[in-house]
Image (tube, rainbow, N blue to C red):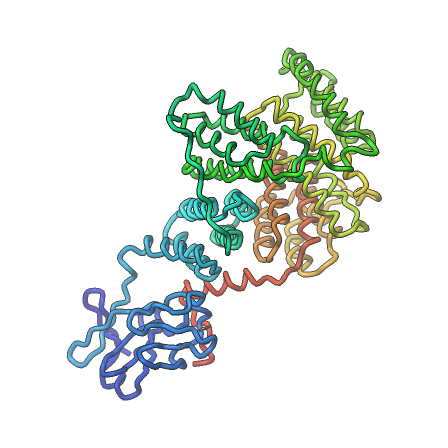
Amino acid sequence: MQMTQTESYIRAAHLDDVRKVGRLVVAIAGHTVLLIHVDDKVYAVDNRCPHMGFPLHRGTIQDCILTCDWHYARFDLMSGGTFDPWADDLPAFPVQIRDHEVWIDLAAPADSFAHHRQRLQDGLEQGIPLVISKSVIALLHQGNNATEAFRMGLDFGVRYRQSGWDTGLTIHTCMMNLLPYLDAEDKPRAIYHGLAAVARDTSDQPPRFPIQPLPQSDNPEKVPILQTWFRQFVEVRDTKGAERCLASAIRAGASQTQLAQMLFTVVTDHRYIDVGHPLDFTNKALEALDATDWHNAELVLTSLVSSYTSATRMEESRSWRSPVDLVAILQQAFKTVPVSLAEGKKQQGSWVGNGNLCDSTYRDRLLPILLGNDAQAIVDVLLTALRQGCAEVELAGTVTEAAALRIAQFSTNNDFNDWDSAHHTFTFANAVHQGMRRVASLELLRAVFDAAMSIYLDRFLNVPAARLPKPDKTVENPAELLHELPELLDRQQQVNRVGELVGCYLYSGGEPKQLLALLGKLLLREDRQFHVIQEIEAAFCQYSRLGNSTGGINVLVAASRYLAAHTPTMRSQEQTYQMADRLHRGDRLFEDVN
Ligand code: FES
């Protein structure tokens, strides 16, 4: 068919041709358009059903409603709007009849950014993954709008879940953090997974009505007393009182460091609360604010409070009390931490190479003690390290390495659920480490000791210990190993082989960026659960610090083993995403049906 274009309208067909058959499919400018003649009028719509691409010329029309004959989604023929939101709106094109010719306007909506933003909001509100994925693909295609899509999800998540921050927003922030490691094609996929998790987490939940700050809160001099009250209220599990203190401190102009310190103090006033989740959530909320220039900090940070006040405290846990009273050991140690730190401060800058516990040589001595069978010895070695001038943040990093080793050496003879124990310790330790980089406070330092005690409690998970990959076991062409990885993760029970492969690839000089991008891709193709996402994100974060050292390689070995233990899954989310991507690209999904 010959095409003629004036303004944004394109000649599509002769009117008589449409009238004669009632429905005519034409291919114009990359679109497959369905022209429909009803009641002496012509309508033009995309011939691909926005749900899954079924050809709509095979649908049914009644009373100006077009029904797709596949899953029976219904569309207003005039506007394309759907009566079944799960299917999404159908693109409809303005029509003009000029000299018995049908002309249609295929131009995109004038403000397509606002349009896709609104569709994303609709997708979040109605919990429709297909609409979310389409909007994200369109928004990111239009430019670097990942931050805008992320901010929308963050705002939505903290507003529409009465009990506040949870796994959905944590996944959302993990996905944002993963973006720098991913291939370009996987970045919208990651944002989609994060937003879909927020939508799931808020689905059928009552909204949050945040508490207002105290009157006359814009007084910076009140920050110290608000910090004190906040701590007291969390201690007695008074959620509303604590929320009001925090909101008031933000309104009073507390700095980002003061706020981080307030939160990390209350979340470490008791031992390893809720197996580390509230501290990890806190770190993630702060990272989410970093990504959005601390937009909406009041709503974001107050959403954490109920996770503090409702948490189980390990003082109440049998395993932390007997047969060894770990809480008593820690409380005793905390009394001596200030003195150890003060002694260490005098030595900082001079400890490297002095034969003490924290330089690179002695790190190898610290790790076996952290992974050992003596809780008191573990606490003692941490205090010694501080006394010898080891910086708090470095100590937190070493403890995180030890936690990763529990997973790298996790025995596949364990009960499957035991993966979670080792995982909780590692992601907690990583969050403590990241928090320590933000604010190295005495209070947060307690969590380094907590993480060390959790590593101690997890020691049975390494009996027998899985073998770590050996540095001298290398191959000539490590790139070939990467071809094997997707196929291995298509099968169950490949934990040890995957760990060996990742270690061998890196010890053989394989390009780390390619491995990280591939692990990210393999994570995103799965319907993986919350912990797998946390695990990969924390491992990438640690690897970016440790680089291709033995510690860095072991962290990636640990994460890839964890991923292998939890794959393959149904991959239904990937199917939805691929459908959205193909619809966005204009693919004719069911050409053979035509
Ligand atoms: S309703 Fe049209 S493809 Fe599902």
